[in-house]
Amino acid sequence: MLRWCRFLVGLTVLFIMPLGIASKQIVDNSGKSLEWFREHCVPLKDAYHEVPSVERECKVTEFGNLHLVDAPTIHYALYRRLARKDGQNTYVDSAYDSFPSHNTAVVVFEDAGNGLITPIWADLNNHGSFGTWYESPKILPTTLGTILEIPIRSGPKVENSDKHLLWQDGKWRPLETNSWRSQVNSRLPEGYWAWTNRIDVDLAKMQVEAYIWKPSDAMCCPTGGKATINFVFRSQKLEIQDFQHIQAK
Image (cartoon, rainbow, N blue to C red; front, side, top):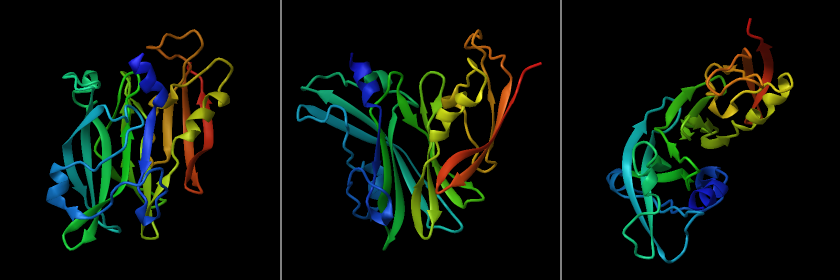
């Protein structure tokens, strides 16, 4: 029952108010030293188990920086976050307390001057049925501009639902890069399908190839050919520009 509750809660996305980034929750964005953030977590509010009887534990598991040519240096932190209920010695998230699934939150920071940095964006999960975790952010040079990619992985088959921010007009702006997945199967012959959450899009190339399953195929062995998908950004949203399905011979 516990895992199903987590599954229903899903992934809680937290955006931070400064720099014009859309926000669902205000997080303390006061500037502190880089050394402080290397050792301490930014307080984040969970959608799950957010009650007085729950004690939180948070540890920085990774801290790094990304140097950019056309934007300020970006710093990031990955967090291991656990909860203990009613004074129990067993953490309710202990089943996921191993690499990489223990990286259950990510925070992005920007230089604030005078040797300080400040949080500008954060994302937090509450675990799905197989756990969801974050990997190290990376910079993508694209035709749209400089994009910050925050890889998000989940499940035993390493599905992804990455988040992306675009450096534009002196600010990091969120991009919508996942809704296209719901449109793929409707473009295929009846009964054919693609495992859309496992398609990893290269935003530098704006193209991807995806295996296609027939209705009778086993999960291990798609025989329905491949789909080549070309993308375009419209109003900061990733959309399918061209879709070609090539049947297997």
